[in-house]
Image (cartoon, rainbow, N blue to C red; front, side):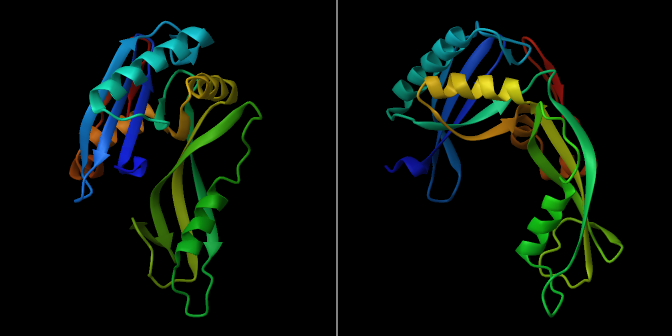
Length: 218
């Protein structure tokens, strides 16, 4: 089966490193076909403190997952967490383009890009921009403005940042293990997306993930 029919997740924690391989079925669901776990020795509170130990743990978890799944992996979505993660709210505003003033994907992309036009310290980088709500001509509470008519489009977002050095050291370990990074994902977002229902998220349910070195809330 083509490799694009598989999706791989990698979670590198203080106590445990885990790799999981999922197969995308014909009905677009994900079936777990391989899991690999090993003890971690190179991380402390989400930060790499020993490159070689972290690389070794990644390789062991990868090999175990590959053996169970019967496939080789060369890329993965990678979870990140730690005390270096910070976040804040921001807002973007743009004029709706187009003659008929119908909101297009380009308008949505522009307003989200505008929301990140804020001062970020040089030692930090943005890893997530999470739209909370859109506002069209002062009408708020809109989740998806695509196709709506309006003159002004606004968005309230939550921006998540991480320490650049922490991200780079994590990337270095993963690349040395021979894995290409598809995307870096905040662990809290990944965990809440997989455990909370849509209704729970809308109502404001919290999720607590207690790990070996960090405790995370989403």
